[in-house]
Length: 321
Image 1 (cartoon, rainbow, N blue to C red):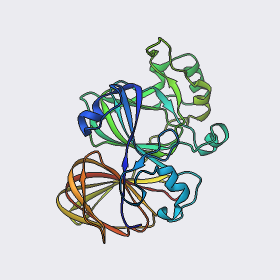
Image 2: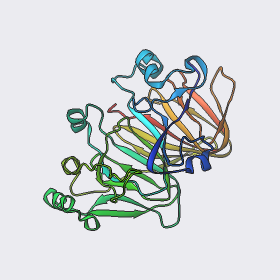
Image 3: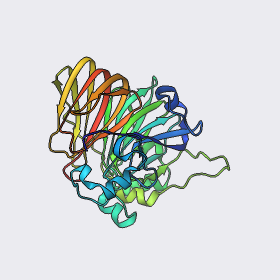
Image 4: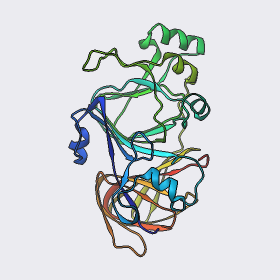
């Protein structure tokens, strides 16, 4: 298969969501509280659908199950990655995710390591990222006694920032932030705190204090990222992270073109965040790229050319998957 697979996002209503996904990308949203666009997903809670070519109308989970050759006969019961765009109109719940071992035992799915590329951030916006507890005993005490001001660590944020969020990291997007998230394909979230807010019926969402205590890494240590910039043709390529779970980079062009060659990864995921350009693969007519488009380059596409004035975040599966 030598054609890219373009995807229709799946939208999720969230108590903290808004209309930013329509305002920035022109998506038709199901509600005015839309928080997430699952852009490239084979997760059962929101599998994306292919809109072109041989697999038009089929969901990504079905293609993974029935046509593994498209992905280089990659191993694994589930498609390992999920990319989404999050619009935090309000603060998200402060949460933490388990690693693979804990998730397999307790949730029967993958763990959840993730990362964020910040698309936009209002002045003064902040993340909740990490915590101040020095021992598990202190962590448990602060969580069980609602000592949130002592526990949570905040970080200022601006557009263009990148954050790696390993499993075990307490975290939350603050109000006024939009990110492109690349993550393991898991929907397991343990809420530490949800700001005591209630839904339309006056009910608070459940917290998961004991699970949070079980899986949080103590003490918190910021990951050390080796961010590398390079030039590929006319593109500036920034590699943000290359982990066991995924590699994530930015392709940015301000005119001209760049030809990319496939490395060891059997497939590539890509999301167009800004601008307009063209994607050309050998033997195919050019594909127009506009912001808000998402696609997979399968294993048989060994090289491709991007041209125009365009910003793309691309990811590939890591060695562990």
